[in-house]
Amino acid sequence: MFTFALKTFGCQMNVADSELLARMLSARGGVQVARPELADLIVVNTCVVRQKAEDKAYSFIGGLRPLALRKEAAVSVRVDAPAHWVPERLPPDALSEHALHPPFIAVIGCLVPLSADFVRQKFPYVNLLVKTSEPAVVMSELAQAFAFPSQQREPAATEHAQLGAEAAAASCTEAASGEDEALAGYPALAFPRHSAFINVIRGCNHGCSFCIVPRVRGGEVSVPVADVVAEVKSLQEQGYRHVTLLGQNIVSYGSDWKHQPGFVELMDAVLSQSEIPWLSFLTSHPADLTREMITQVLSQERVTPFLHLPIQSGSDRILDLMRRKHTVAEYLEKIELVRRTRPDVFLTTDVIVGFPGETREEFEETLALLERVRFNDAFMFAYSPRAGTLAAKYHDPQSRAEKRAWLNELITLQRGIAHEVNQRYVGRTLPAIVEGKRNGVTIVRTAFNKPVTIRHTSRQPGEFTDVRIDEVAVSTFRGVEVNA
Image (cartoon, rainbow, N blue to C red):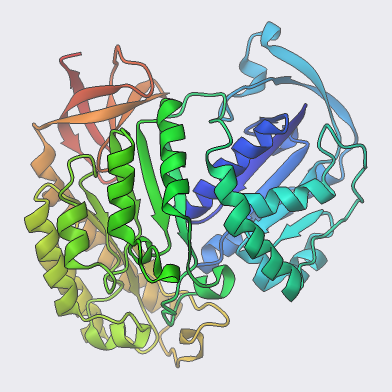
């Protein structure tokens, strides 16, 4: 037995990779723990889309230094315990003694291709660097460097994965085949789960001027339809109720084989060949979201009434500088069709303010767009330059304080809009999946991914129930269970 801890930064695609990696590690005899100090193996899955995520990763890795320098100790660990449980609070008969050594620390994901040398110099106690978060590749690298229970070799104190150009290419090839094999081959973790993420397309071909993703994740590579369907069916058999298909730009699915099949065919296959109750997808690039996708996919009853469609700016000039490949008018036309096709859709977006060269008038165009569309929710950010992107070379006279002021103005507006728009749910009864108890209340989650707090339920985690919404807040709704 060995214990492992996963720390994930960034998008839901990273979350999906970490979940599959956890399943693979569990299959090798690992027990997931919540606290790094209890782990033999610590994996840090990183993100560099924004400076804040990068800084958080560095801070977390720096915080591991005392663990890397610690002396051996014996602690009590619960075998097969859910990662959110605290071992010290479990009954004594559920615990077993486990000797802890200085942990093996692996840093994986998007930070590594950009900053491997810096990580080696700043954090010499990191044992392994992997230039991707793809689980099959990470497991292959760990098999060479970390002493799994079946292995006898002790890893070197500071052993790094140094992937050259040829090795990186080989790893990508392994991931394309190895991960597909792995998808349905690993059982869910031992603790109750009901929602899962599946990465169905990696990378991005768009090259937006502000985005580092193509540089760190490469071009688009799709997982074959049959493998996606097999994974969904496997999760369904294990009791999962909600599956979300993920991609940096999921509606570009199949681009690497000329969309034969494409996104519509993928969704049709999952719906027709599985019985998963709720099926979601994200994220969609507006330039690639077609009329056929909207009318044929969003109209399906088992497809959840949720769409995340990033706009980034309400100014055509800024959208052009961002290289978004669509106009505001084209975006609005698609929003109109979405709402005609699925009137109950919960619509969210991304917005960047303070893009290089953006004027006050152009920022006000973004405010006007939010007023017009009236999103249910939005993820809003001040522009963060990423080294190696086209936008990082643009002249940017605006100060951080000005960007922050604009962001606060945008957030205030959008919170007011969301509060008004979401009032439509008050008094309505909605289906929801029970997640569990937290801080004395029960959390359930709607089909459009909104958590709802209720006082109690007779249902078990993973079961469906009906809740009446009594109050809406920015991040959470409040309600009561009905017809239990």
